[in-house]
Image 1 (cartoon, one colour):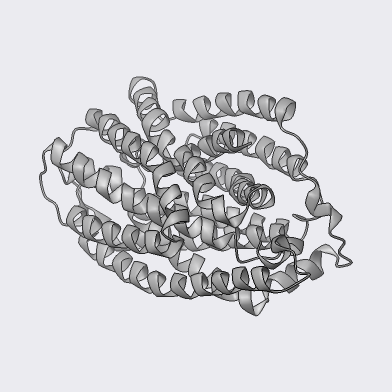
Image 2 (tube, rainbow, N blue to C red; image 1 turned 30 degrees about the vertical axis):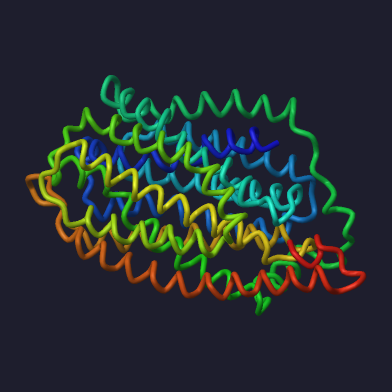
Length: 408
């Protein structure tokens, strides 16, 4: 199950990740402004957020496998639309369609993990699933960039759609139904469940933390390839090597980070990851012409920090909801993440400016904005950690309260 979820996440993450390194090509080929490219990125995120909210009321009322396959088919169709796009407007529409389906898939994956694995080992599971993020860099992004340079920017989307069809067939054949949550009876209709979950006071704090997590994370990445190529002097042909080496280190680090988040504590790992991310990101945003080897080192350390933040916070968030509204919580949380990320990308597109020579200006300002968001998030996640620890303690000391009810 972990392998199947990781492979599915690989295609979803790759579909989103490949857009960032393609930015330098899209800005030129489609004649887009930085603000327009920011809209293309945020269009996916915002539509994914809307879909997550709409799906929240139904997420706990069906077999998880059936929901997963429905949204995965829609995701593949959206990716084909991206491959067929020929202008800024058609690409924007295609990204919105893809987001309507792709954004829900991540939350469904986390719900299934929470259904099947105890809190004590979720860090390890998240670490392995997070390998999909790194594998998309090691395998997908370099291959995608190669195809884009040899053929056109449409080619990576055709590659993802083809992979999706194969993976979808494997999931249909081998994945078993996930229906244990249906044994917990609920009289609430979809709209009532959505409202109850959305305005649950203990959940609002988690949604706020997710907002801060996503806003910071989505602001740096969209323009990274254009900044690296045009400001740091790294040739476009070397970008696959940069992303590939970074991804290899991150891929092997994922399970290790996940293990230590279970052993040392998820907040401790999140704290270390935040410090690493801030230090290396500020260095990166202030670089001038830089040798490739040094940039690879900086990127590796920065993505280690980012991976630590994602793995630790994702595992921690699974401990917030109760079993009877787990799917609704995860769907809304994913929606909040996507919408916040979309807003962050749009804001980033307004902060940075591309000159006529192609250089990206104000990237240092963007770094300061993200730093502030990360520091505030550090405080917010501290209180989420305390909340989950209290629920764990209740589950261990209160007779007659099953752990899977007390802790997601």
